[in-house]
Amino acid sequence: MTVAFVGSTVLDTSPTHALRVVAGQWPACAACVGIVALLSGWWPRLNWIAWAVMLVALGIAQLGPSIGMPEGVIDAGLFAQAGESWSAGLVALAVVGVALGAVGARRRDLQAMMGRGPLRRRRAFTMWGAGGGPGGGRMC
Image (cartoon, rainbow, N blue to C red):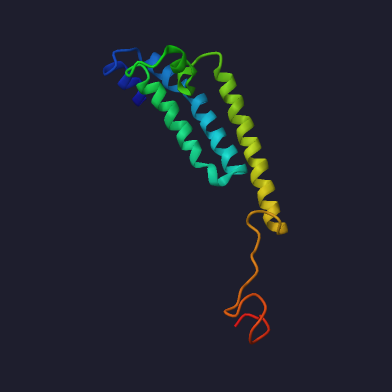
């Protein structure tokens, strides 16, 4: 409703056109979610890159024409695909990213439970070290 109102009053376009343009952005947002899920599932320390992908995509869409970016770069951005035939590809990217991210998270969690993953338990150290000193290496 708000989009239709703003589109008709502020942007001087029809409410239907404003709704279609905004609703057409969801495949790009879904693709960003897929990228976040993929990075978080397999490489959790690198999930900050997902913010970079989102910011670059938004920067290209919003600032590209203003700063004179080539038309090919602007058209290649995620948010430039609103209502285009490539929107199905963005949705597919989202589905694949979420699925692979779930597999990666599950794999990582299973490895941690088995003691072989990056989250494995470390050996407890006493104030005397790992095994020597008074108490024979037991915790104090």
